[in-house]
Image (cartoon, rainbow, N blue to C red):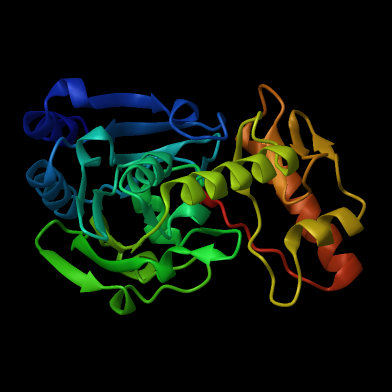
Length: 301
């Protein structure tokens, strides 16, 4: 492992690499264990070189964005985490087409669209995390999903050997899923097809959705957003609430008293506590309603 990390440092520079990295500092849950190493490539060429090096090793590795949908177990991640950071956060606008790097925060994309008077991204303006994560998960909110606005994406293969462009259809986007789950390929930039709109109307819609989010969701506490996927024919939050688990806690991990679809860190929660709470919720909902809740959050380690 040490020689592999040294080779990675030669590609990215030691300043872009953290050994024995505390992943609670890189995930929105503010919980979890350590990864053997976290590296932040500074451009596509560095990313390809790092991926090629990792693919040729026997060390496990994964790529992450802003960490807003990830929980690393307390036992940690024995391998290398490649983080898509600020180096992949460019934004270009040509008419009604917006192209952005996958490290770009969703809020920044929303503000760029607003400034250009482009509508279509409002639903996503309050989604935490990066554009790459939103593509990977086909993120959605308030009736909108990324599949509705993606035109194409530039990908790099998991082994770093190939850079190629795919259409939205070729991403095979469905509910909280893309084909990237299976291929492991990495989106490095995404082109969105938006439409001309009225800036005041766009801003008003963004403000309205932000107010709804702030009044109904525990945005003041660390979480990973909606914890469970929506089961067909149901709403996860309502099932959890109807099971009598609203506000239920395991240690400092809690089903939010504000919105039962959220699990929050009340301060110092461990990943183990969060996972124990998840299992209790799953078992209780299954027992009472016969519905299996699947986590939307990616559990790593």
